[in-house]
Image 1: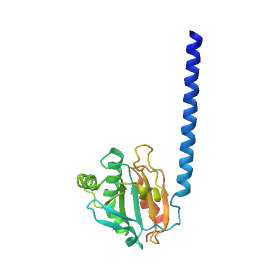
Image 2: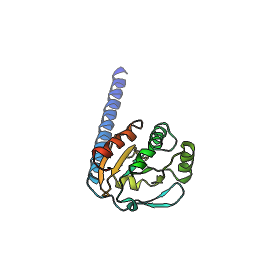
Image 3: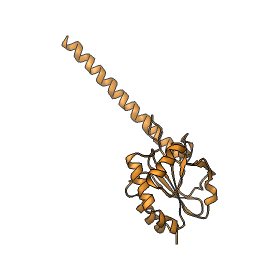
Image 4: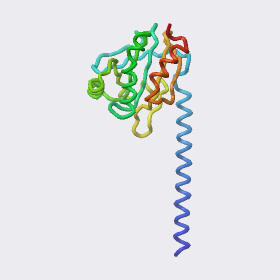
Length: 189
């Protein structure tokens, strides 16, 4: 009997190892495909129109000539997203003084965005990417299974081209990092 149980345990272990290897391969292939299809530094922002929290369509092309920040975040009113939104709110006057256009983007709809803006008194629009297609087109990753955007930010230059892609974002520091990079990359005067 002991030998039979040992063989069964060994079989489960081999199955788990095989599954974990398969998941690793799937994750690596997904990352490779994402890196091949993403928006690259120096490329022009494609023509994009998204609705804001009030259902008004915003054409991002109308902001060419100004630096623009598109910060993608997972979900309204969650801890990290709240911290990040507050950082942008508290530094919004600095961005505005530099002529920077700022948008937050997530997959939630109008009502969720309206509530989040009201709760935090946000002075900027939150755009809706319910299907996730805009994030995908711009190379923004999403969490598998749940499909919400990862916290990633795009800095677009006045020429309408991607100046920097922030793949790993610290919600407590991203606003300051962007302010530094706007000057370092000579995107503002």
